[in-house]
Length: 260
Image (tube, rainbow, N blue to C red):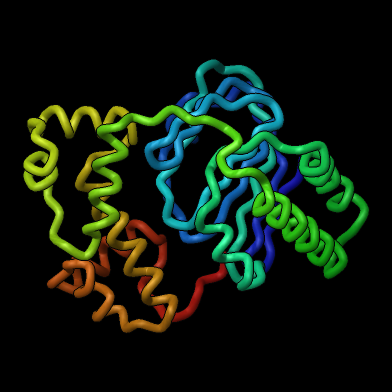
């Protein structure tokens, strides 16, 4: 097992003998990429509206801003590799391919060997050598994922949740309320609220606000003024935006990418 954090890279091989079923693995968002390679356990993984039961050798690919969480079904050993990394580590040509990638894959033999090789790199090297080799393995893995057939794992979708998420995404710069969503899909507020919370582990309004903050964050990272980004996503009061931003991102609005 290992943990390694440096310059936009957070790699770990994790093992929990008897993991807590909650809340350690609850829903969350972040502004970087994440890859989980599942070794063993009994877990269902959710990325946005997709739910998939993990099997040994499965890969979960999570893009910045995507809502995700894992549900552990039993308190049995849970082992996985988790790679978190900034987009600055990837070549720009790769971004177009990445955006269309699915969330769930079965690792090829080459991918599995690559993950297992991370332990050897961590044990045998340090300093710049370790960083260089980890970066090389990451680029190898991302190249393999980009060339994998589309969606080689079939996840379970809830059509209503999918429609709500798509509606929120398509109208992210507009005011979005629970009554407006219910009017759009002709369901009661209690039905939508309960169904969404049960599937996503977060309320509709909390999801909307977080998605607006993540969208504003991307604009700020591209050089937009924080006050203008806040206005673009419907925050007329900057202090409200500031508090919500810090709560979601963990740091104040800035035109610099924070160290991970």
